[in-house]
Length: 227
Image (cartoon, rainbow, N blue to C red; front, side):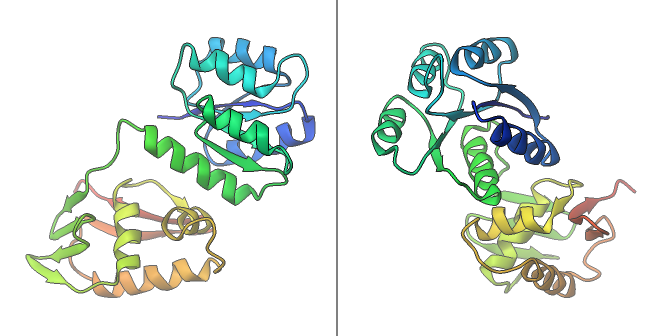
């Protein structure tokens, strides 16, 4: 189900940049240019997450958090300038879930959004996934293929689990880097290609019901077939 993100930010350039990037990531976006307009949008659209600038005209971010928290537990990520330490602490004390300092890296912000949404998600995937001739146990970091445990490095297990927990959904290489390796990882997207290649070699001919499929020009998906 598509998630809705409300961006409350008085800087029109930042607001539009966030709208473009997050739309590309598959989110539905609502925007507001000040705190009061943001509260109205929050009540009208019931977003799954709020990106909230702290320093705004009409009503500042800390007041918005107070109003939101009085009626909702919706996750809030604050957007703060470097020197706003006091406001940052105040925002967290009032119930904000995370903060990102401006100027921010888009990849880091997207990764933080995903992490916060996962924490609030009521559809967290099970720790053990089962497909034909394959069991992926994230808790014990074990992979079982045709009833036999297979020795696979932890990062390959994490990549396989991540893909298999959202069958038939396509992920870009950048998304996989952020979600499996973490947004602070400084490697490039070839890392993903290498790990996918190794997984394919190990899982070759295990089943014709599923495969790690390349979606050319986009990325990879764990494709599950009905036949």
